Image (cartoon, rainbow over all chains, first blue to last red; front, side, top):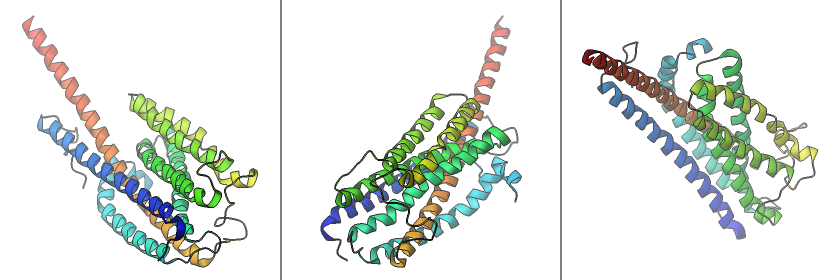
Length: 59
Length: 253
């Protein structure tokens, strides 16, 4: 597969899209872990939801 | 399961936990097929291999508008129906929409340089998409600036609905004004003008990116629900500490 004289523009476009999408995935996954860690920390201090269910439980 | 059932964040979390792995898997498979088809697509007789940029530029451009559409429906949910997850949906979609809009702008620019001879032109299509990107950033700043979530939700919902005026302007800018950008070649009266060799990879990539958005959006909504749980538990913690403090003061007195 030859990309011709403008290969750098094509490769840069695909690389940039890949990088931004990966960044979004990593950011969202890290945020999920951060929120769960904060909830566990608060629950460990004795504060729980009115329902009595664990705030970390998402099932 | 109805829309009313999904108004319960706990049920929504349970549902997303079940379907997210399937959505992520389907997205990965479709992206792989779309990328393979894009790589195998022939060169365009005028544009050569740079036509391959279309397979990532167009899905990002479509999604930049589609995400604002989703946020506008969510804004109605906040203002009219007061759906508990409406603001969660809008707030979670904004950074993802901003990312797609950024990618549409940059890939368009990288496609424009070899084809038009310039990275940027202040024409109607490019300028209206840049305005959309700035509106995404403005909305994200608004959510962060207002501390009370319900006030932030209402203000953001109004701004989202006002900003929705820009979506038809973007779509029809190429018809209403004389622009450097080409007119619509897929969603147009009379059917697509694209050859099937380009149309199929483009449609597969568009579906793959749409699935990617749905997957990321549901995951981001789950995070936002957990963030709000953190906030409410922190407020309970703070009020409990205040009550204990008052009791101690009274005991000392």
